[in-house]
Image (cartoon, rainbow, N blue to C red; front, side, top):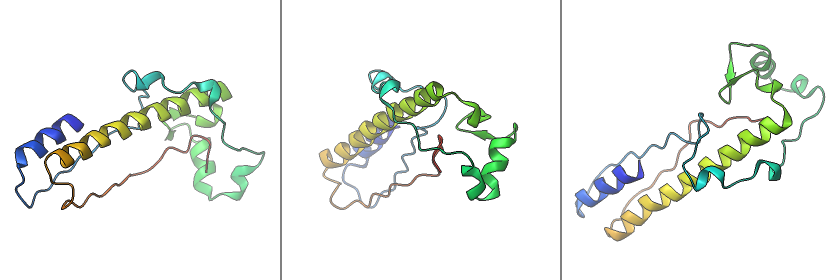
Length: 137
């Protein structure tokens, strides 16, 4: 995405106005960031989300239904609540890997705008469609 976006920015050549939609699919399953980002975070260092017995009782019914329904996928898995602590740590670490990679790639796009002299007059909108719960609510 960053390579194609940079190519587009280079092709604009200072022409105004322009529109660029740069949409990164990550962080998203499958959890596989390229190296060196793919092993940047050690799962042993990941702090687990705060959990307590009966926590779903205090939340809207959707949460209990999602965790109880084997047809509903949360974080790319059926039955997310059945993940062991080690599996959850691995999943969170892999997500952090992907976020770091995307952060670097967004930086490359912003650098291309700087290099083309377009950053000052460009409106940049960052958006996200959702986030995996990964044990947090």
